[in-house]
Image (cartoon, rainbow, N blue to C red; front, side):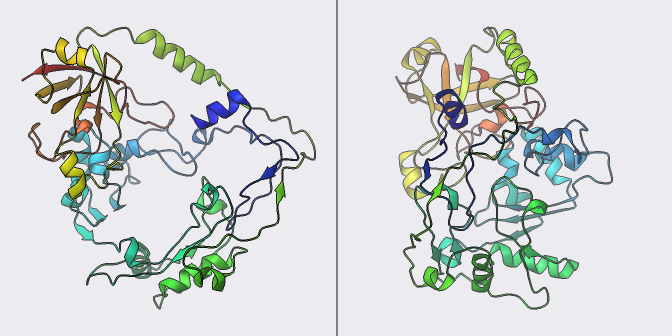
Length: 402
């Protein structure tokens, strides 16, 4: 959305403009130019389950994980390490996702909570939480409005058996005879394309602080200054001015590739009002939770004992319901129950339910943990053509009293 608005409004820095945050850990030159469009998904490697699906930014789309697990191929996914994310629930379509994950020869979950994924895992590894480990602002370097860097040290001792994620990966790699390399992360770049980094000692476990120090060494930041200022530093960096390109490479903004235009046109033409499923379900966020995180926190549960079904008052009346009543929500692919909540700000004809609640493992649609919207979507029908993203919003549904 931001990129679209920038294109429409010309929201780009021009030659001579100053860059407020040129990057602390990953300084980048700024030239007035267009990054040429690319279609990486059309090149090798391809998914084993579908030869039309390729990689985006060096990664395959997560929506095909169940197909990659069950594919009739020696290169199918047979072992999976899930570091947070709870894919068993997040992917939706439990009738397809759960059997696929159950068929894995090895499933390891690194998670502090007993998620749906953890319940199916052969091994559960409790990871160190933010106050129990070292961290640094390398990954978010570009997001600050001015040069800023910060490192944090542990302030709590983790319980016995808890491991930082890196320590688990190092231990497995040591036993498998793999050499790990710590690189400065560059957003959107594949690992192979990143500059060479620090090769870890694979015989003796490194100290966590040493890893932070080694990654900072790859940047212009002074580690001692970083460590001695726990509230962060705002380095005095030489101003970066947007430069004129040396020559015009001919690259221009690709506002509407032909296949995208055709797909949008077909979508508009093929979606008339559905008399069987007259309402449209939109996903919705609440301030108290972030995806699957914090939904079980005491404060969240106090405000939201379950995740509400937000509806315009006219739609509640049209469905012969009352505010606070448990209703049945059905799509072409499944059904759930949800408690209605009157919301005049909703557009009539559109309903909304926060996602990542409930459980995909229970057989009951009356889930005491909340409404699991993943039951209403499909990993096979209506998915995006390039990134195979399921239709989590704009799902045609009907709502009725129970």
